[in-house]
Amino acid sequence: MRKVLAAAALAGSVALTGLAVAAPAQASTASQTSVHNWGKYYSSNHKAYDYGYTWESHGRVYTKWYGKEFTPKYGYVWFKYYSNGSWHKFYRKWDGSYSETWSGSGIKKIYTYTCWGSPTSYCGASFRIY
Image (cartoon, rainbow, N blue to C red; front, side, top):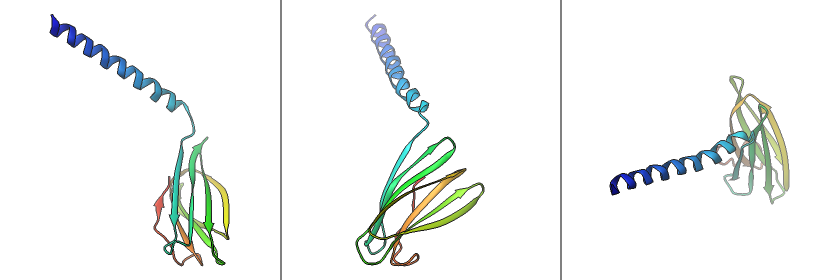
């Protein structure tokens, strides 16, 4: 009899735990926006870095990024993304501190890296941010 009661209590406990976990999971899938924070990603000489966050809303992917560099030269952030069956690449230049938001539809992957001095010098490693 004790074994039967113990098994029933354990089964009830597992069922309640399953319901408790399922409710928050269901609530989180109802939200349309999921934000991915990323960075700090440095240039190879550590004189510039960028960071930011990426999210998807209504079929578009948005990226808000911030750049910092503390020299008389410029920092450069590169974005490479896969959209509609092909790769696209662009960079933004900044001096001091800067921030910008960009977006696109049909984006499946986004990579970023940071350079300093010119668009192709002192570039850091590439990171997937979406």
